[in-house]
Every structure is written in structure tokens, then in C-alpha cells.
Image (cartoon, rainbow, N blue to C red; front, side, top):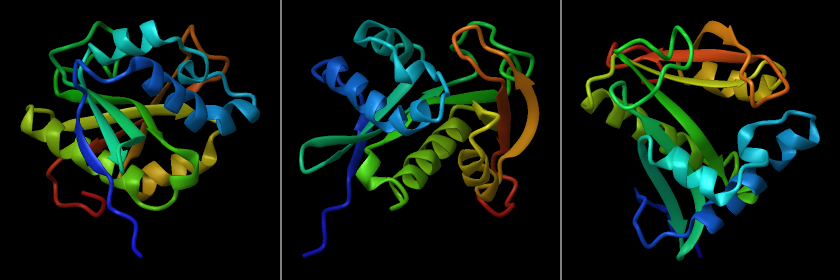
Length: 176
């Protein structure tokens, strides 16, 4: 029997930030084991709620079980971060996570595609994301989807230098 395709929907008031935070911790645990201190490896539910309130938080459910998430922050809805993120034509993706046993099965790609499409609807010309400079597998994943390196940033809440990656939206290039 083929498993059901996860349903992706917007976060609702009734959704549990504790469950969402636990998913983030599980999904980022392998990165933490490599020594990377992503905020999602240690944030509490209040921080998850605060971050989710800055944009559109999408959740993926498979048979009523939370299995993925992505946060899209539109250009008009954020405080300054870095020179690339401060551009008024760039949306940001963050809190991007998939349940570990479902990784590399297409759900992350679906979530990211949905966020890219939504960013374009919201008027963004680019969608950007950052990850640890040493997370080569993630950098390759984004590059394969059409993201390019646009800079570096050292966030005060991490222990690594971040690579800022960005993708032009709607230009018809591979990965769109």
C-alpha cells in the first residue's frame, strides 16, 4: 500500500508549538551532532511561536502526524538581518524541517517549491535561505534547485558562518 502524500497547510491557532518545536529539534539533530548550533536545535516553543509570527508558517501532515514545516517571511514583514535579506524584493525561508525518516523522499522539495511559488505571489523577485558553511549536503540540495551563493553572515545565535543562498523567481531557469 502506498503511503498517503502529506497535506501541506498554513499554521492554525489550534496547532501545537510544542509539537512544532519538537519536530524542529528532531529534524536538526543530525546537524547538531555535526557540531552546528542552528537556532532550531535549541529554541523553545515560545521562540518557535515568535519566529512563526513573522511570516507564513506551513505545516505538512501525514495521517494527522506533523512531518514537515517551512516558514516564508515576505519582504515587507521583517526586521533588518543582513544586506541581502534587507532587500525589498527578497523573501526569506527559515524553520525548514522534515521528519528525519521522511528526509530525501521529496517532502522538503514540495515544501520549498510551495514557498517559492508563494513568495512570487507576494511580490518577491528572489527567495533566500541560509545554512551552515560546513553543511555541504544542504548547500548541494539548494544549488540543485537553482539557488546560488550571494554572501556570508555570522549570526549571533549560531557557532558557524552562514552561507546565504538565493534563487531568482520566475526566470524559467532549471530548479524553478
